[in-house]
Image (cartoon, rainbow, N blue to C red; front, side, top):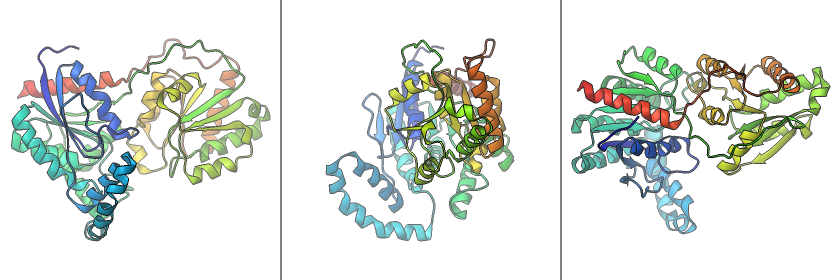
Amino acid sequence: MERGNSKRWIILSYFANIDGKASSQHIDDRLDHLKDLGIEPVLVSSICGRRRPDIPHFTVPSVAPSGVRFELRYLRRRNRFLKAALLPVYIAVLPLYFLEKIIINVDSQWSWFPSGFLKGLRICRKFRPEVVYSTGGPVSAHTAAALLSHFAGLPWIAEIQDPLVYEAFPRSRIALKINAIIERMILKRASAVVFLAEGAREKALSGTGIKHQRARVIYPGAAAPNLPPICRSKGEFCRFAHFGSLGGPRNVGTFLDALDRVFKSDPELAKIIRLDLYGTMDGVSRKQIEQFKYPEVITDFGKVPRQEALMAMQKSDVLLLIQQLDDLSFYTIPSKLYEYFQVSRPVLGMVYRNKGLRELLLKYGHFAAESDSVEETAAKISEIAKKWQTSGLEPEAGLPVPLFTVREAVENLVALSDEILRSG
């Protein structure tokens, strides 16, 4: 897909250019592909991340105490000088922060939308973009984009990374009401609404009763890893490997209980199965590991650099994907899955009530079990181990190969914008 003349998009994303932040990585990975496709991105984000030197990138602060406090914490992490210099400001804003939380207990990034809108309006006068595109976790980016689209008269693509309204909403009732209002506003006013999973799209449309002509699902994908090819051979152990953080409702408890059941049923499997962990974990997960009866089975590598993690993925026998045990998992697909797909290794997905994710795994020849079912997980572990012992775990011939690259996602996004512009 190629484009000729360069065109501009104004992009509003609260998080941008922050290492290790998933909602930042989402837009960061797309910018170069947009440029390759003839789109000149003009980015507006919060002051949490550094400005990118390769594109017009404008950072603006939030205006409420909660937002100021939140952003100061990011600034103070950057270096020791800022940590000391900003400490008096951080302390001074605390009383106002607590007062705000008593009056209105919503997410700390809510007050970024006035700054994002006003800066966006000035940018529109200078750069003359043809499309407004909002993405990222906090809803303040979508609120700013709605205002900007209205006052600048531009089509608006809103990309909702996580559902805004769902059953076990973790914040206050007023925060839930605000999110419900913003969700309806997006579906009524945006030229197109992009969801990252079919479950999220169905939830939003059924929950609001709004039928949006351009409510689309675009899988975000992952960047193709720059890895040297390796010659795989069967090792001494069948290695399951988990990459990413473990904490709260996402932990290895069910998997370890399932391993325990497998080893009791067939003690010989304890000699060949191993579990490698890459990433951080909270105290609950660490305690689960310490109490496991077969400590020789588990190796905790801790947090490793991204390239090293990708190489470890490539060498693992089975990649372990664990959904957290909460209602949000019904409607989302973990971004880690797309990284796993890129290295072409078998995946055992521990899925929590998510029909779409289960179907996606099975479609491409992977394995799925309910993340709270010890029995089903144990059955899958035994199946995988026996397959490893006999025929091996290389991909079966004839199965479709998933792409799900960032490039593919950006091409779909640009095609959607072309459709909007053609329709007038």
